[in-house]
Length: 484
Image (cartoon, rainbow, N blue to C red; front, top):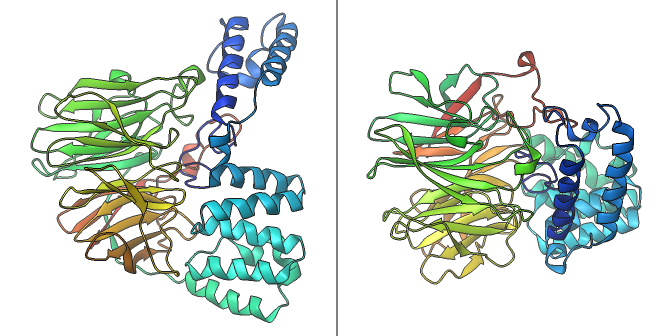
């Protein structure tokens, strides 16, 4: 989600290259910090807390000494953590920043081998080749990136200075200019004048004609009725709600399902809760929470992202930090592991085929199709000039996948499937280079129209302390609609 796959969700430690074992070490380090400094004001960033009271310097020395001991006792990543593209991408970027270009090239080459359809990886591999003086390979990977319809800023990237005089580079520039051309089929559906909402997901109740929009920052859910009247469905932190991510309405059973996780960019963030995830179940008639399904296995991290319902009322949830799909079968009404697909890291968007036989899940390596009965999975096939990487919101509509790709440029794409649902035949770009776009995330299909969040603004946080930008640097939330 953060880093390689989706920059929309910025968690402390996410995308940092920390293994699961590293996270255990970090958890012990946090316990040590709590024991040393339990009375500290939790509103102060963790790195500064220890210095704020008498004796703080001594405590800092003990604190850092303890950290060094813990790290020296076992921060080696287990092999499974080193066998995915995200790990090698993160390592490759860190090596690149340290000017360890040969090592960076090796790491990024491995990352591309593990996720061969990932345009963002291709771009960084091209940069590494360029700075190493291999102009041919640099141009080859840059051309591949652009052929997939993405441009990550090569024209202004100084790392490509050495190859700009090559004839092939001017051809690639022409392709990049074409990528910047707007394609628009969307219109503004409505605007939410709540700039600091930081929404990630939207749901729809066809019975009452109401939309629900979840806030990652304010830890609440708002509703918008047919007349456009907006109100809080839940207030800030009500029912213990954390950042709101995936939401789905079950119109038949009159319930709203909500995926919620502890997120750095939320009001009242407490790092001690980091790694907990929960599904909340709301009664739409009574407007109250009727059940919570917690998953707390700290120091192992969980992060519920998106969810989907089948006709029987079974709920499927992606966990982008555990690389797993969970479910809540209607019959047992318990949170259970559904499947941990092979070669799937950071599962994100999820949808079901119309017949309910197949789940489609977007992740770092692309999109996988999962047989609901056998739980077997495989990657969705596609032509060479198509990539299914970088998709946040993912939807099934009339034997098509509809995906919101959050690469550069951000775009809404319709992927037409083969009759057996196993592969993509062709694509149609519905929206790209829309002036409202600022990290579009997810949407909801209402009849033949997709309503989707155009500007989540989930990057508008200060990296150092996780605080939100001032209101004058934020914008009203725009919900777009596009006919499919």
